[in-house]
Image 1: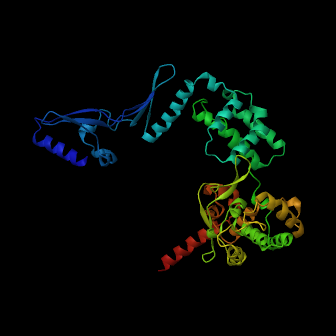
Image 2: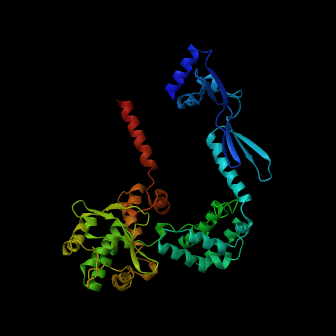
Length: 439
């Protein structure tokens, strides 16, 4: 384009009598009933000696430095007022407009306007449908979602959501009503994480879908406050000595080294139980002390275990200390091509529920772990995270170790355990300043 501009305007200078340039407004991009106009910049049309015309637009370099923009690209309002104008036709057929300093601001407002216009023209049957009808439409569009996740959605809908919202038309649901419902869920003694999932994931997922489809003009769930989980300092975490006791007790229950090794792997690496039981020998590198998580066990549509991708959909690699090497080595050597944690009677992978009932719970009893502490297999992830933080792990290391989708999830759960390093940082700044000034 730059070469074309050079040719055209070079030609204009040499044969100005035979080449003319006309201009037109640039940036008017009509989309449905909204469009954005650039009030400062316009396009130009060049007529060549052979009578053909070509449309010219400013180059990216010219647009980055508007002060040197060629005159034929400048409108009569060039550098006067705000640059971008958003225009739209409202549901009453009236033309409206607003001006912005940046295109990004105009685009953001246009998106809001288009949602409002879409909702205003949405069929009444969609806006006036009951939440129960919406929930079925939402679930029907969940193709590709794990069967276990769909099962949880349906369970929460049946037990907690539909009794309150099933017959309510979706366009009458308000934030205040939802907030009162959250209080009711708390009064029933539901855990904070359970309430979060019911309100934000299950109920909120259906409401967000309706908002995205234009059936609702706003999302009443967005600003609803839900209880935060109890901070990890108040949750049960096994000490190193307790880990040893539970691991030995697990071996005592079955007489198998396998069960001691599984307790150690879960409590030290923080991987999920489904991920651990899905490990095959080729996923464990004893030399580099790495475990490659590529799959997990999940419940299929028939309520039977099936292999599925990890929870985030992405594989990951976690490290383990030397003493875990000695725990895993016998398991790998006994069957170099099978499951790491397998049944004694056959070569199948261990079943999570069976192991929990037949090994884990008896092991807690033998180890003298108080049932009131609420230690579960899953809470071994908290144990692993707590000890990793004490050993110096930061948020990004924890995120990778635990397989969280993003660092904010890790920070929300474990951020309060991280040491306050403010004094350390300012002291280091003072040290570096003193060293530089001394030199």
